[in-house]
Image (cartoon, rainbow, N blue to C red):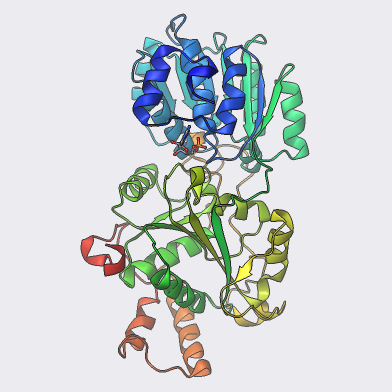
Length: 485
Ligand code: AMP
């Protein structure tokens, strides 16, 4: 199958050729011809399958006919996070290089003025997070009665993030006769119900079972004690010993752990950055760019912040925590082994993680191989050992916020600032050092190990105290250990 045979326009084919892609991915092969025939499409596909181009390419072809009118966008793409919206925007820039289309990106953290200018001129494509879109609508900056194509992307994530009421409102503002493309990685009943209501006689395309992991990913479980500082030591040795590690994403369940782990890695000299929902948009974008450009090699991230990020060629994924939801595990490891490339995914598993670990194995229908000794399950381990009382089910696991809009401090004017994550107490420097210090001491006495790395044990432990007050910073060259340079 070639791109030519899908019915795309010449301009689009030229841009695809320039991007170096020669064979459509299965979702592209299945979805593109239907989109071009103005059919509604229900796509069950994860990120990493090429689904973005699956709707961007045919939309570009369809948009060649007609032109935009002021404040009346012709197409609307809804994304759950700013990062995903920005990625779709990048796709339009890349594949739309031979078109003179106007594309507006309406996301929180970006000034209204710039966005208004584009809307006033007339946007062919509007890519938005639901909150910011409704803000613009309520300010009278836009009319949605001219929308010919609606794309709802990552619908299950929208559900997780509490965006469904906003989406229902938005859909009511659109013409009934529109074409709708609806994508979701999974199909929980709420999403199924939504799809039935929003789509008319849709063509269903499904590329991989929602719960399946790519066959090109080598998955390994690694046993570790429950304490965070001990897990960090295990993680460091995994990173140090990883084969052909080019770059890595490390997932934590909670934002506070993202911040702490990043600081710890930074202090240990690793080239690392952090991505979580409490960071402002500028820092998030800068971190992501630095990671994409290879300026930082390790990205510590939360699930919500990292969902669907288009970061090609991530060689390794490390699960610092066993994910609370088994499905998140599939999404996490899907950051590697993309588009047929080889990837490695490691999961640090403590005695307290039995439930979560077994749920993952059940979901993926595979037994995950242990690297080293298998962990000895002990359901009480988490409660006994951890100062914060964290067990296999983190008390304050980073789950998307299902709040009503505009209730969080400082958010009343920009609802799309809801990153979907709790604004929990991510103040790593405040009261953690004492507890961390206590753990480190306990661990050393208990295990009675000698100094590591040329007698620097004490030094190492202090690095773990994570009391850094530095601003968000990327490790410069001097922070990059030789194996990562
Ligand atoms: P997506 O699922 O849209 O996030 O895309 C995943 C990755 O696959 C992105 O890095 C795309 O640039 C890439 N990609 C999209 N289409 C193709 C294709 N036909 N061949 C190879 N890579 C592709």
